[in-house]
Amino acid sequence: MKKKDDLKLQVSEAILACQDKQADNVTVLELEKDSGAFTDYFVMCSGSNSRQIQAIADAVDERLEALGMRVTHAEGYKQAEWVLLDYVDFVVHVFSEKARQFYDLERLWKSARRLEPAELMAKPKLRRATIAKATATKSATGKAAAAPKKTRKKKA
Image (cartoon, rainbow, N blue to C red; front, side):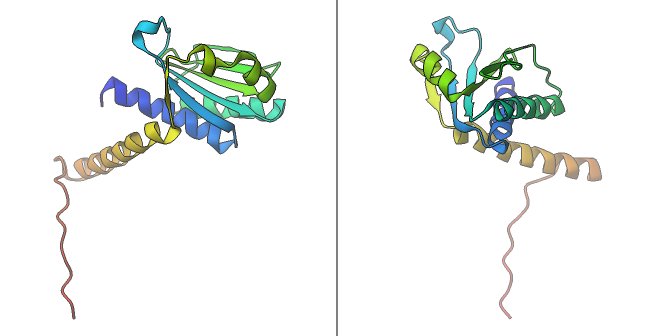
């Protein structure tokens, strides 16, 4: 799998972790290479209280650790107004509504392309399922699997 596909899968997993904890207003910004950005994506969401904000951050961390990824830098967890989780190629921001409106990263990074979470999640999931199926077939037979043929049932 290519690095770009790996990155999209990782960002998708972070989005799913946010959604699993009922994060509000999940937004993804794809930052431009020549904008001086230090990362490729921002995943941003809001929580309604400090416990939910910490639960979202914990869920992201646990889900990505299961993929073998460790956060390289985290800050703001104790105060739970703005938790930042840095995974080098993308950064997850979990805000309180008040902090999100105050800092308004969407405005500060207005040159970034705004993506719907579904845009990142649709393709990697399909690809992951296809790879898992091919791997299972390959390990069972020792050869790569061919695409299954469609057959029609005869009417009785």
